[in-house]
Amino acid sequence: MKKMVLFTTLMISMLAFVTSAHAVGSEYTPVPRGEDTITVMISSLGQSKGDLTLQGDRIEWYEGEEADRKFVEHETDIGDMTHAPDGYYIVDDQQKLETFEIDSNAQVLMQLYDRDGTYEGTDIKWNEKVTLGKFLNIYPNNGLLDVSTFPFHLTIKDGKVVKIVQQYIP
Image 1 (cartoon, rainbow, N blue to C red):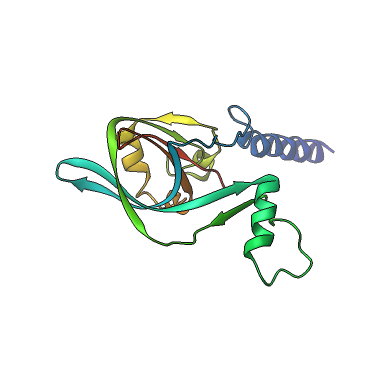
Image 2 (cartoon, one colour):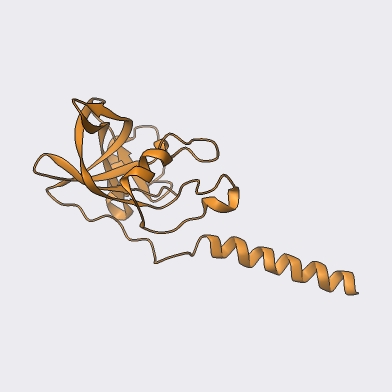
């Protein structure tokens, strides 16, 4: 009987840990669209003429009902499906890399990344602020989680990226 109680207690504790890993921070909120915000799949980060740069392919990111509409418009072999399977939809009509200069004071907000080399360290923390320097270390670290597979929303002012926000994909 004691073993059963101990086992049940451990299972409940593990379940609480796993579910809390997805509830850290505030709730998910979509990144607002604006004239100065674009969404890209980052191809590379580097230096050009002494400036920090980002190469990326612009995409269109849709969520909710808008994703459902775009999914039905763009996909041809969907049978009787009427909505985007995962609640989001990406359109990439022109696969073309563009180079963007990153402001040295750019704000970076991450949702999910490898914080410490453990699976427990890859929990979701909505809009976690990290320094640009830390982002430059996170991006190539693809051991447990490859953040290059996530879209990023870029806010551009005066020709420079001033904000980088990782888009969470369920």
